[in-house]
Image (cartoon, rainbow, N blue to C red; front, top):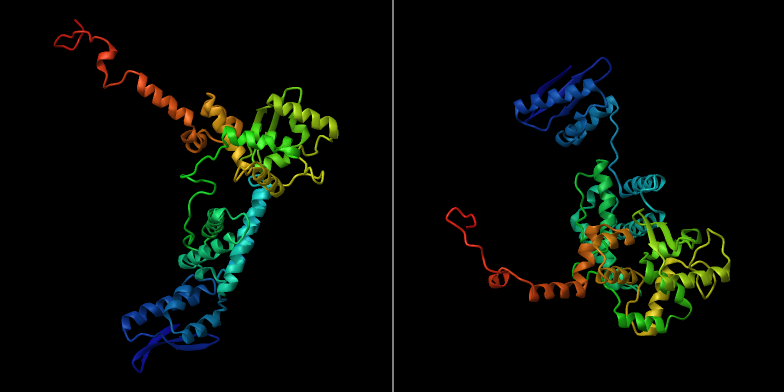
Length: 397
């Protein structure tokens, strides 16, 4: 049984059971407040160590009183979640996504790059508890991370920060879902891979001519990127059993979006593919692209470096692989293909094609200009023809 009594200026709780007698200050001089507090304390004691009231009482009671009463029923302090707890949880989340084929291993590897960078930052800040990782700290991390990115050779002026922030936002989204934190502290910096100001960056006809002149040993790689619009990850993973010479088509499930694309093989590319197949006599599972310098499979970083090197030889800046994807998309639109056609070839959505590629097709803008200059409009009623006289009811006479 628990009773209250006033000792000095404040009220105290007095608990007597068959095995123990406990006393402690309630930390209040108000009798009504003391009674309410004593009632909650007595309820917590009767419910035992699993009572939800102990967390509330810990915030209200004097520390010595709380410890005395909590110990008697065996209350164990809950450990506050740490970054390490969240990291382990998120790693399990990634593994599960890979198992059910909702995430590629390459994407998971990129996630881990950001996670390792954030861990390095937290060590410098001497921070481990999730409750201490708030928006100001995240904003400091963004500045810290941007400086590190810009020190790299191919930093692209820190463009990778957007992806880092998006990954970190996803990590803390898992923390919110698991009730480790109440609110996501990471503010997005835009969508990764999207640049509303630049949009598509296709090569010009002159750029392509220069690249062809200096292509050298990279002819197959150049033509494959030019006429298939495959992402770099798909280009280096493309196997010979995905090249169907009898149908003159390439059929592949894309690495990023897991969409099946069926690409007609352009005659120029077909000729080079057939010659390469005859030269190498590869196994069906062998990669189509190899590094001409080593005859080993071409990796994505090496593909990026070789295309940039080709661009430097040809005097074409920033000749990275994704520009070939932009080039074919814009080329198809300029030749009259619909956004649906382009989306099917790229393995993208129609919305992405309309937003990312169509505004940058000069021929489409010229077509609109021609329509406006030669067509009949609302400001040229005389060109429409004579109007049919109408009576008062609005019907033709």
